Length: 245
Ligand code: BTN
Image (cartoon, rainbow, N blue to C red; front, top):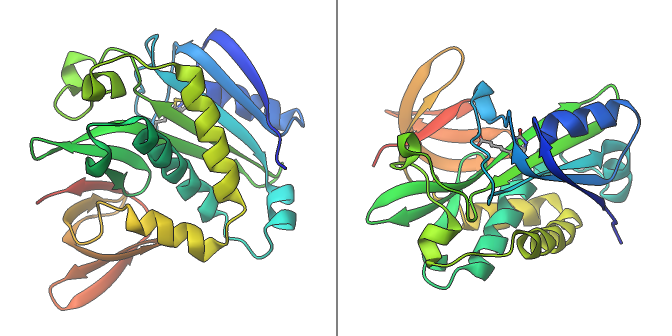
C-alpha cells in the first residue's frame, strides 16, 4: 500500500517548487496541496493561474522505490499517470460531460464543448535524476474563475457541471486512482492512456525547440508521438501540440 502524507497550505508560490526543494532535502512520498499559488507554473515556462477554488497539488515521488516496486518500468509512465488519473477522477464527477473528456498529448485533460476543445487540467512533471525523485504537479480547474484571456481555451468543472465541488474529495479520489494505476504494468497504463487520447488520429501542429511540424498522429508511446507527414512517419519526442482539425 502506497501512503502519501498530505501537507495542506493556504498559499505558496508553487507546490512544484516547494516539493522540489523538499526533494533535495531528502523528503519523499508527500503531497503538497495549496489553496492558492502566487507563482503557479505550467509547461514550457508558462504561468498557471491559481486562484482560490482550483485544486493545485504536487506529489513528491521516490524514483528508487518506483524502480524497485515496478520492475523494468519506464519513468515516462509516471508522467502519463498524472493525466490518466485526473481524467478518471473528472469522469467520475461529471454527469454531463464524461463522454467528451479526454487527454491531449502529452498531459492535458480536455473537454469538447460545442466542437471546441477546452482544457480542464494540466500536469507539470519535474525530475531530478541525481537526487532520485520526481515531482508530479497537477492543476485542476474546479471552482476557480477562468480568466478572460483563456476563456476560449479553458474551462472548469463548475462551469461544465453547473455546481461547485469539494476539492478535497476530488483529491482523495485522484490519489486512489493514481495508486491503482501506479501498480499497473507499463503497457496497461499506455493502453488506458491511448484509449482516452484525443490526439491519436488528429491532425496536429507540434512546435519543438527546433522546428514546427504538421501531420496526422498515428500512435503515441512513452517516448513521444508518431506523425504521418506525406509519405513519412516521424517520431517526435517533445513539443507543444495543437489539434488542428
Ligand atoms: C500545464 O498544463 O502547463 C501544466 C500545469 C501544471 C499546474 C500545476 S498546479 C500544481 C503544480 N504547481 C505548479 O506550479 N504547477 C503545477
